[in-house]
Image (cartoon, rainbow, N blue to C red; front, side, top):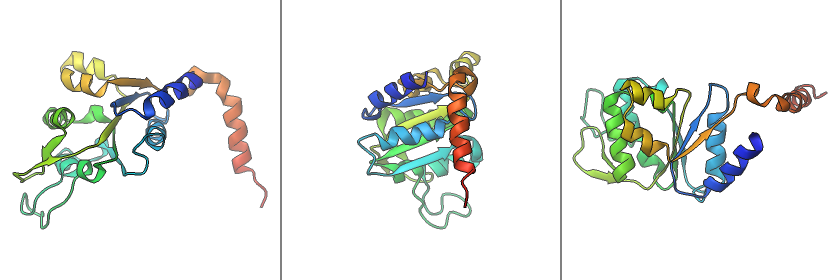
Length: 188
């Protein structure tokens, strides 16, 4: 299963297509996103990772799209968002299934038009960024429940890559155990 996954990773790495990495916690979605980035034609540009579930909902919009000075209390200067910082490179949206319906709409606009406005801004900002996303939840199920936008799901799910759990690839356990033993039992 891992050889098939690596073959697909090599095939899609050089494309501009969005990739949705799915799998349980601990399957290495972040590692595979960085691998896709390093094998892409954007590897010499910025890689920006955003853990959507770890940022408070009230801050996520500013974190992704930036804000203008005076946009809210405490906004004492213009701040670039992660999309703008990643322009020319790759942005990795981890745990994308956790974002609110309002943020889903804003994210959809960026995916469709490659433009956005900073919080409190009036100027449209264009970005050229490859988007990788990951989730440990079943987004299709969230769509069926009405808590995730169907159109956003289809935009993100251009190239789906399901990462198998270790239980699904037991043949790798001896190889991994040997590698960990070698790494952690070096005599000094």
